[in-house]
Length: 390
Image 1 (cartoon, rainbow, N blue to C red):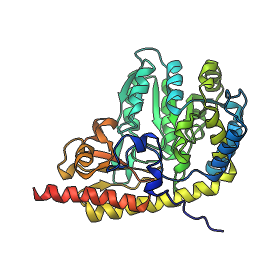
Image 2: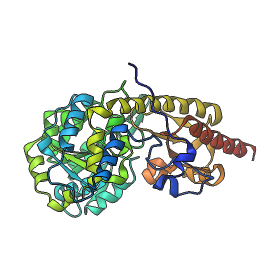
Image 3: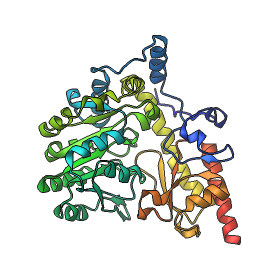
Image 4: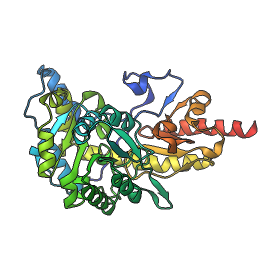
């Protein structure tokens, strides 16, 4: 039986939600900024949460939960990656996991490599851990974006102690190739540095692209690497607070085991329940349907931009539901999302927040209905037309 696309909820229903996406702006704004999706929850997740409420299962998160085994099964089915559930610990969210790991991998003032344009909180997380960002921007080629391995090598040679990797990359949707990740692991091992890989968008890798978990890229990766992930992006569970810190090698595993118990206590009970259901085999068909919808939307966006905003530049992402759009040619300045919000009534994520490389760019969330996406691009197109006339 073929998989059916998952249909996003209608705008009228979505505006009943009380999350950030639907409360930051008034109702005349189309919100395509924050990374929340407009899909109904996976049925297995809905059932698990309803059952938990029915039994009053709202106490403390247990020291032993099923989510490690659930994720291990998911990783083997989806990525061909065998994970030892005993080497998975939970915490509240990916950002918290990143900070706690960096605190133990660096000393105050150490430098951590980040690869802009990149998820804006990375800059704050490095600072929260007491370290400083060493910027090594992605390189854009005709084939897409790639890590600047020579630049990372130079940064590590100059004393940077860790690399904070985004895999798949936010905002470009780049899935780093296995050979690139293996080369990164070799660099880090040679310099005695660590790699912390944020893999939160990995479940949303399109079937035509192979996702390689960093820890599986090479034997060296297992010895110097840490992965942090969650069901929150693919299954829209960010408010439930559960992320996984995963290791493969002995020394990284020992470091994660040494984290204070309080790091794990911060995990949300409903996050564990929902995440376990999300990573179960029962939710695979739902995820496949979401990927079909996202594939349709990433291609639809190409056509809409070509028709209504031909000056915009956009490369279809290989993973996730975030589009990185270059509006530089439109004359809307370094932060075009400001003009788009004010004059087109469409909320996008502000490009410069991702780093200096984001000037002239904005990030658009296309995990929405076709009619919402079309309306948003038509509004932006009308703004482009009015700009041309003025």
